[in-house]
Image: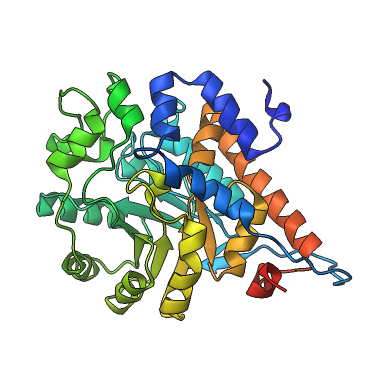
Length: 359
């Protein structure tokens, strides 16, 4: 299959499935337990209907917006996802360059296969660093300091993983990184490799290293530990989102970890509007999970999100054609968002409101 044959995100997903080893594809593609939330994330966007306007006189389209005060060319950002070298040899550098070409924000996972210093030199503003809080607080402080020194413009704290969701595909496959790959950011302190256990090596790594008693005190600690804006990723409740904002978060991401943590958690499209209502402008609100079409982006903005983040589609693009594939995925979403805006009667993303979702 050649790149011109790939017309949409689903095409890239199928092509990635054909190209990858089954255990790697299952790691990228799978979710927790029965994968109910994984499926709902995608289907719930599709169930939302667009009550389009006609004769709106739209002559031009403007997708530009800002996130944390930084300009981006469209409200589609690159989410933090782990282990990009499983997708292509250039790994996270390829994804970062794709984001730069698309003039949008790139967020690097703590669990990257290339050290943050080498990745951040490859991308432009905005560039963010996603953080898991390790049990070793000194190591966590060091990661924050390194991210600041490397040019990160925000710290994205993942809060929905005090433990690791039971991802049965990974357990069956005994998922682990192949020889030559490691959690690059913590290799210098001897925490780059997975424990040698039966089942998922990643799950064992998380149990051994990540803070399991995460609390709002940790958010206070992080906000006091950096001058960078802090984004809280992984909320599905309005009260948690509001408290995050009150305790210093500059933004929250409505997210269920791509359906990979608590199965039967609500789809992110279902959780988004209550979070936006409760936050009431106290911080920016983003959303991820199941975004596969530009019309999904429009729906998210109509419910009050400032931007969406996409994860798996970027990985699929990397598998198919490296940097070019990830860039193509972002451009598909851009074109589809433009089409949806035109057909719904919006000339600018700033005009999009909830009226398009109901009569």
